[in-house]
Amino acid sequence: MNCAIRCRFIQVSSFALLACLVAAGCGPTLHSVEGEITVDEKPLAKGNVVLWPDSAKGNSFTGQPTGEVENGKFRVMTQGKVGAPAGWYNVTVSSSEKIDSTKVDAIKEPIGPSFREASKTPLKIEVPSADGYKLKANSKQ
Image (cartoon, rainbow, N blue to C red; front, side):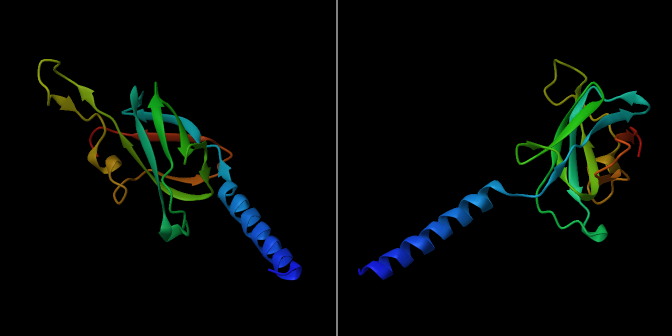
């Protein structure tokens, strides 16, 4: 290879490597999503929340922000980082309680079925929110 070709190859390779490094470190801007969740007006002891991007309201994010619930409080993570991208989300909540330790399948779901399905949940949030997030579910709906 002559010098001009070799120099051009190094320039193109360096640019491609830099582009890969920048793309790997980039992603959507994440906003803090922390809040409280109650079921029948009582803090949910343990469970999970999942944020489902609402494409009908323009949210095209393809990831799945999730969070654990402890003593009625939750914090959402996206791809291992705290927060979620901006936009509207349908929120599902899941939890289970063992009601009889002598039976393997004796589990009670304390949250109503509509709160567990993304297409039916009445829980909707917009990220970011200046007011924080207070989710209210019930055991019946």
